[in-house]
Amino acid sequence: MARSHKPVIWSLFAAGGTFSAFVTPVMILITGLAIGFGLLPAEALAYERVLAFVQHPIGKAFIFLAVFLPAWHAAHRLRITAHDFGIRADTVVMGICYSLAALATVMTVFVLLSI
Amino acid sequence: MTERQIDLEILRYDPDKDEEPAFQTYRVPCHEDWVVLDAINYIKDELDRTLSYRWSCHMAVCGSCGMMINGEPTLSCKAFLRDLPDRIRVEPLANFPIERDLVVVMDDFMDKLASVKPYLVPKEVKSVEDGSYLQSPAQLKKFKQYTLCINCTLCYAACPQFAHDDSFVGPAALALAHRYNLDSRDVGRRAREDVVASNAGIWECSFVGACSDVCPEHVDPAGAIQQTKIASTVDYFTDLVTPGRGK
Amino acid sequence: MSRKPYSRTVSTTGWWLDQPRYIRYMAREVSCVLIGAYTGVIVIGLMRLSDGPAAWAGFLEALQSPLSIYFHLLALAFALYHTTTWFNVTPKAMPVQVGETQLPGIFIIGAHYAGWVVVSAVALYLVGV
Image 1 (cartoon, one colour):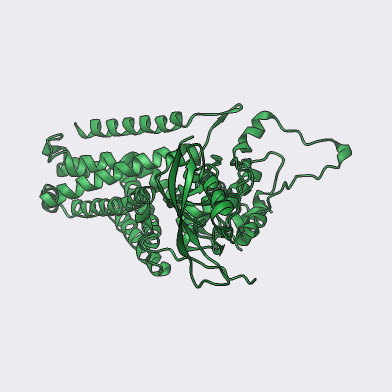
Image 2: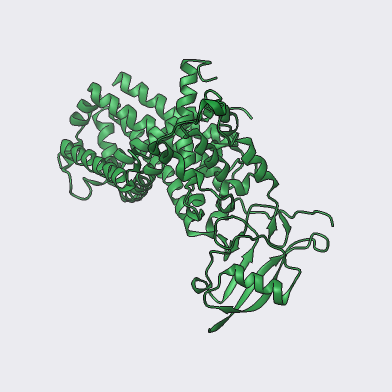
């Protein structure tokens, strides 16, 4: 038997799982629910305010991590989940899952660099 | 002593006669303090001498009597009838080939145990004259939990990854490797990684955690595997940065 | 007497329905679909932001639609399930030994929840709740 290369993707999976465990619930609340349920005024997500955040180096770093880490965590877990549901074409599933994560990463980097 | 009539539905299989296993039901008058193993022993003694099953200590230390009791991997000597309904389904341990009746084929598991180098690989081999290896209580505590495995393989019966891929080294073998990896006298972690850190080793595990749920000795093989994933990942990246260091 | 071991087959698609612990495991695993989808929402939002105020306004309006609200409620439920299941296993993956005793898991888990509350409170404060 040979040592596996799984550590590469697993470290991303673990980092992403940790990041999303801490950050994703409050992010969902803020972006998707807080305004609708009256917790936040609509101006909280006003264009100028969000743009200023995303243009700031800290904002860029945060948004990058908030996409990159959960994307690769979700991609790897989805690959495993597909197997758990009986889908055995691992190479195909792997290709689809990691491509989606790569696409999200590339698009985010592109926007963050140009915004 | 009050007796309770229990129906045991046991999956039978005779390799000389049967094409596939089939259930046979026995009605057993049971004492209130009995375990399932007592009921099975009654069947063997009084009702059907042909029933085959493994057991030994009757006190949950030998690991011989593992079987599926109402779908749950259990030691039959630890399955108290007072906790069970009047109809009990008894099957051989899941995910193993059936040899005969409740006896499963354990050869593959034995091979896997051996494959993880379950022995001390010391830094320098000491002769008896050189004296003993010294180990503090704190160092012992670090790996003590993982020494408690009785090789009952209930964990393999609970593991869905092993159910679908029997090349998986499995919870007990990996917990045993972890026991040695954590031992302060041992330096064999890298040598074990050929098997432990292969795709059939820790990386087959998706942390379902059922193995730790059913373990009668609270070894927590799931925890052992996750800790090994972290250690192996650190080793992997260390090797990338400083190749050959770990050999 | 000859050996003729019999191998039982296990369903590759329905195995998890057999026990509650397997169903809970699959629920935890499926959380990744919602978290992945929400990450997609962030990426789309980022692109709308870079397209200018009108595009951003459209994005915000879409976020207030019933479909979006239901999606985010579902995503929040699964994200919280991911958070709790992730925190609950940290003592198993990273046990802490102090002297000769293991630190009780509840301290490690509690520290994670405390950190999570702090992170969430800070985020809500910064955004203006």
